[in-house]
Image (cartoon, rainbow, N blue to C red; front, side, top):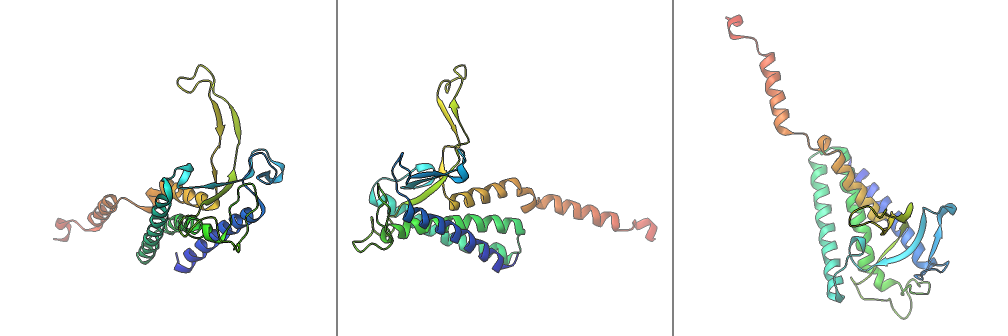
Length: 228
């Protein structure tokens, strides 16, 4: 896979991710139950844009306090730096194009969320019960590396209650899929699943290759007696 193709894929994902996030920040607000906080895509109950902000890591996990946010942002920066180095490495090694694509998707997603955590606190006002302003004259809602990650994609495909006879979880409310995420999260998840599903093609067993090569060499060599 040519380097420019990987770079192009990364740029496309980042642009789509940031364009949707900026649109949501400048057109919607965080207010549960109000029309400015959520709408159905094409009128579908199972596909909604629901504006929320994630204070930390995936699935709502977070580190407490300002220093926790700064540590997480620094960690993201380090992860992105490592990802860039690793992508260049596997491109130079002529790795499988599918593996390069998956790593590019993971890196693009990491960069997308890193941008939120690093810059959004400075360039946006807060979105609680009001639509945020881009570059507000009074300053942003937080300092550098203290921004919140914007999430909006929600697919509540099924909601109901687990039957009472099911051990432990019986009678509890169940929703699939309850997590709200963004394009960057989706890119990371898809990239990871591609690696897990196609790992046999990406990382062929070297022992089997060596063994196959040995058998081929043995079969192609003429018997010593025949040569004599």
